[in-house]
Length: 551
Image (cartoon, rainbow, N blue to C red; front, side):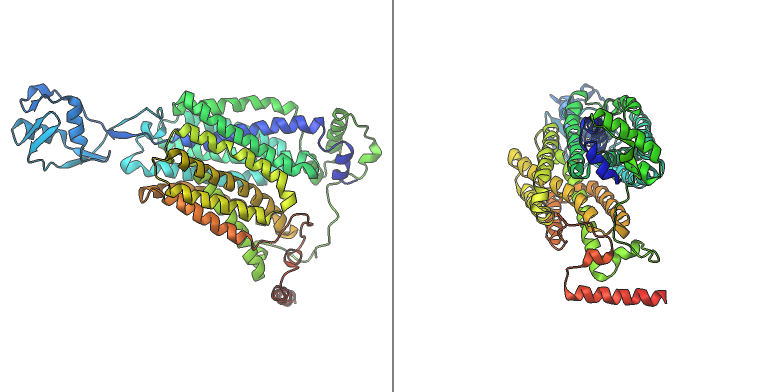
């Protein structure tokens, strides 16, 4: 009996699945903590050059001049990275070359500037961050955005490594390895004495977080019957959004970046208790021909769901579906995603959409402090808008299809981003509103393209296609922090670029085939059928070339 048929008999979404789905989804909250913590851990507080103490009363040149006025004078021409040389300025005032009365300065003020070596950081909005602890300003400012880019490099590695290892060793072992890995990396990052220690373990933190979420997502979708997979997938992403919002509350009350790291990492240890209640994926067991272990778990499922399951029902248990035969002598590789030309265009279109969705999603998530107003509230709202986006996806995707909702959400999100970029900074509420509308749109489109890609690529190259898609998403995430730095060139530029690229990708999405309600394509030919005569001709040409290669 096919596993999906047996799952329907024992109730594909019964009490057994609901409890374990809820438990796995809780991990999504912790994953969100670690995915977004750089917003507060790496926040950039206001700063200015630090000026050493000096006794101004020793010189007659300082009449009614306070030390605060003296510091303001030295910093007057600086940008937080340079200031007037205090010693030279003091000597010129002392010998009469310059005269300072209160805040007024007269005389030859052609003083040389010097580079600051120490800084004072404001704690009005943020507490200590890695920026203030490790002086990531001025000449070292590049390390702040680079550390975020390295984090997404870790996420890329985590997606590739955990994805492969979970197929080899199973979902459950890699789930708990991810928890242990995240616990260690997070704790070491929290006590890092320098960026040289912090960055490597922050990369590992990114790898562990992404790997853990990937395995958890897979476990959720493999736990339930096929018709509940869409809901299960969006359910764990909704819990991810809850973690997103909770992080802003934690950061608001904790403030210190090291304590934030500890607060989001230590709870990971609590999930060790899952070892006794989470089963291995039955689908994975069947794929590895571990039939007896699969039967034991299915008996527990039936017992919990109060269904009688006989041995006859589990005869010839398999997870292999009846599929059209694919020629055994035909070896498919990554290159088949790029040929014929229509397949090349389809693949590039899907991958471009993944890259733009990830880049805009993380750009808006990491850039909430650039919108003005309270960054904690902005971040919380950015997480809150994700939940209705996921709910609408669950309700309407099967009714409206995939292509038009993908295009519509990207266009709406992109236009909102562009409008937000042009709104003056003093209109904070309006600016934030349109930015959050952009976040709503891109969140929905990200969920849609994730599902659509799995339905577009044919079975013979689906894993390869999804693997490249995931890689493109990580590249998009790596680009997001660098895009945000373009605000130094022009304040609205990041939002305008995010919006413009979203509109472009949304328009290209209309060229993708509709996949809702259609069987998954098995071969390249299945993927490209029902197209123009030119495509058919290209396919015939490709088949002739393949035949010649065989001969």
